[in-house]
Image (cartoon, rainbow, N blue to C red; front, top):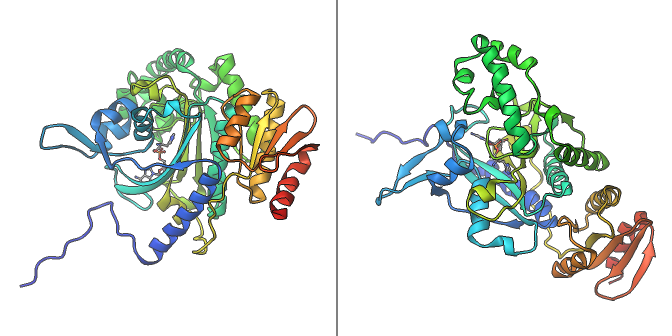
Length: 423
Ligand code: HAM
């Protein structure tokens, strides 16, 4: 008598054949884009202390309430298969004293994650994410760069019908004031809400925006919106992120109902969806988490990042040809800012996108440093050329040859290309 056949558990799958090749190609693309922008690879363990996610992701979230694979080890310690990557990366940042490095510290990962969800097309219990986290700077250019990098990856993977929605959740103070206002609104309309939303008015009222229960949707239509109650500073930060996205020609919609399923977000939040995906339309998303590192016992450190589902990118995109060249050439251009006003930063940001489109490995200052600090940073990164953007044009410096000249901002990319080819 033959033994019964065993199958992969529900919601999991084997990766083989064409699927494996597609993943290899996607990984190569992600790596070229992210390492080209100064992100370093990080991999954290597949399981962590359960407390990390309870504290990091939040007790009131669906993830912590019902989706974690949690088990005890032989010594009775509670461990959990990682449901997401941001809390582990922040844990590693603190554990390795990365706040002592030059900020922001930019890290990327491509790993598997585990959530006990109802399995269906595009939703699995073990899935892969590519993610990018920048820790240590609250510069709005970090937000815009981070979002732009995911937009680039989705474009290069030919993901169809992509839409980007952005919003801002503000800081802790505006959030808690708003929370009370929203709770009042929900309580006043309690009878029309779904059981789930009603039971979470106290713990997580914001999630009511995610509900597709008809009564709840109606109540939420005239709910107060957080975006209209931001502090001046948070509103300015968000305006600057939008201005940078505009400058980089990244199309987006502002959606004041956008809330994300994790508690750590502050200020910018965003989500890319693809209409080609059907019900599970979220391809990737993220935002700022300026308090998370501190909540995990580290020094106060702002953070910004995203993660995108590998399976969903492949479902909604085209597989690139395997064997695309990926280059790990050292940094070719560093853009320093003579002054850190919005205008100069926007010019630098646009120039950064132009340089990257021209195939250059380019970075700009994201750390709000003095000019001297920026030049030190550029040489620590091994930049071949530095362009210092002033009020009028740029000082273009050859870090190897030592020469420098005054040129128009428009001429910077060309000057780098010419310089590299003359070598
Ligand atoms: P998230 O929105 O929970 O964010 O997940 C990011 C992406 O992972 C989703 O857009 C989706 O493509 C994919 N994904 C999530 N759950 C599943 C599943 N069950 N099956 C297949 N794909 C899935 C986070 O995880 C945050 N850590 C993102 C972040 C990074 N925020 C800041 N930094």
